[in-house]
Image 1 (tube, rainbow, N blue to C red):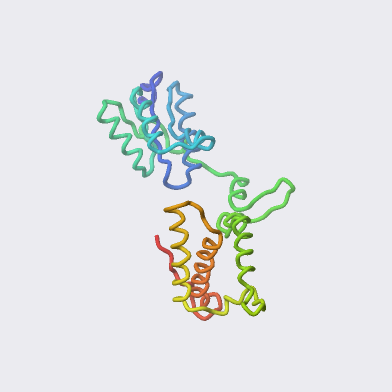
Image 2 (cartoon, one colour):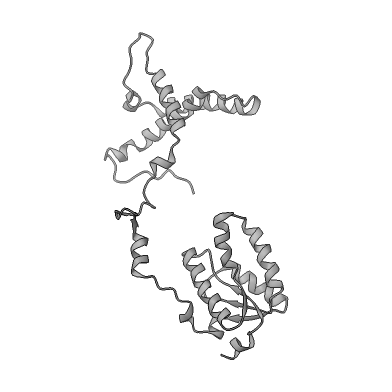
Length: 246
């Protein structure tokens, strides 16, 4: 292709979509394009390769924007891969404003060159976890990770707090799940405010936090969550109450 020949021996900036879709696949596609250009005697800067640098030492998007722009400034041309990308559009705009030649990938090489095809092993890997022992399990990316969500330290402190408050004035001990029998939301809210105020006051004045106040916030929050969701989990309503905020 004529354009490809004209770019031989020149510095070329490869602009490629990254954030939209599968990031790893986007990087792999850009690598195919980079190798193709290198094989044709072109000196290529591929900003998507910094993806691997970020795995070792993550940096901000603004850092990479300035870093990549320095490379773009010394390039003779910009070649952009197909796909939607605000970042690529910004790079094209910058190149146009600074007299840098701009080419679409389709103008210099067939799109098939940068098409990524997964092997059967890769397809299986995407759906399953393969252990060194030979064991196979489905992936847990979309499963609730209770082991990771909770701190064993915080849970133990909270359990000690709950156990301490099981004892009644007459010496009797109530069941550990007694609170789940039901309490008015108003009671939880008022108690939550008292404990939260104590925590907030400690934060503002002394930073000397009291475990009982922190556990009190946790207990009342858990009580409210229990009360507003119990109907769904007991099968009294048809769907979970969506009380999340985006």
